[in-house]
Length: 382
Image 1 (cartoon, rainbow, N blue to C red):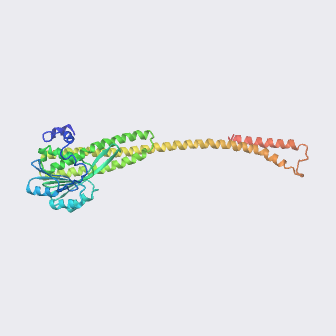
Image 2: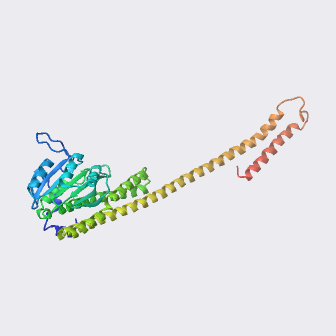
Image 3: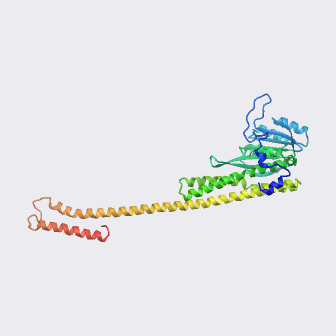
């Protein structure tokens, strides 16, 4: 968080870092729900359901039924319900109680939605893609978060480990002046947490890109595969961050239209600045990986050319040796041929009774060998 932002929030909120480090009563909200035994039981996907009045927690409930009853008994309160991968029955129960639009409920059940902002009457439906960087695996883990924000309720539906909504709830409960601003303040805090969660991802991706640059110029094996995998993660991260500008812009327009507190609008503009910075960094990562891929392809081509040149030189040298061997074999074959013919010992052969036949055969062998030697020498075979 920037220094300017710390000064702006100091009047309403304690340090965000301190809030997030505090254990808080909702420390389990970022984990998958665990079944609890007992007569009352707890609805499987309900992580936390609480009612707030005047910026402070008035009651906490283990079931949606209790939350509905308390909200009806206390008009003007704010119900904040956190769900983790709810089953259709639970979400349809919420839809009937808070008049949620069927299309939004269907999106929240199916998940795998793109980040977006839609308004159904007095209810906002927001889809966010949270992300966290896994140091051990050196990869990005994406989560999906659906929010229903109405006049007196906030419903969060998570499909993944991120973001840590327990920290967001703790932050808001420690900032009653901010929570007193209503459901829009909770929406801002969650959006702020999602955008702030992108910072470690950006740092992790930057570190991976730096390592890949070193591997590319070091001719490390498997670097092409790592470039491809990291490019896919960057593209997926870009899909999560690019729609944020439109979402924040839509929220800003709505805040102005419905006369939301000016201080809250300032915070939202600060989130927009952070989201824009993240989007620009991700775009630069995509371009950097494209450049690295081009450089790697060039280096691979150069290496292949060098290997082909070395093979060509080796083949040329081998051809030269073959020429020498073939030349000497041809030279030695000539006297062998003459000697073989005159060694057949037939009775009726020319020159068998000639006194100069033997010297003539030797001379013929020498002339043929010398002629072949001269021919091969002129052709640089020898």
